[in-house]
Image 1: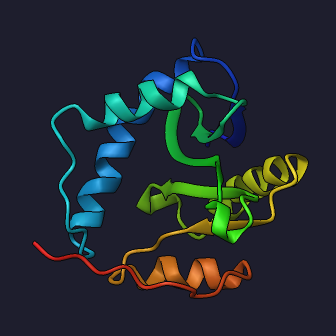
Image 2: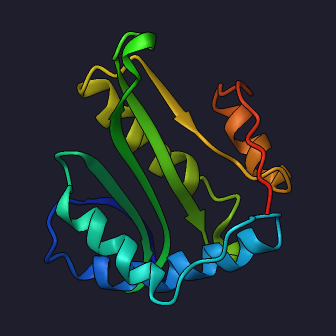
Length: 158
């Protein structure tokens, strides 16, 4: 059996980056079943990865989980600033965490998020935010187990 590894993608030439779009698109197919209101655009996974690649380790961190040569999960976090009326403080934003179904429950998601937490801590963020789909009950339970709490509800029309 192949061992599972978790590592940071720190440069745009890392071969794992080319395998992320397919997993990103799979994540979006799952999200559609959990109530996601917007659909991923054609080539959206590639476009997302291109944007992530430009800011690796400066503005964002990408963590991947691999089983042998197979990509089985990824997590991404980025830096952002709160609006001036909220102090303009540095915030961490976890944009995506996804693990293949057959690897869930193995601790990979938690380990990838820990690498994001460490990166945010090194950059002295005031707090970390993220969004979870209303229909993703397992995701909500996961984040609560890591100490996150509901602060905001996002509504969409159309």
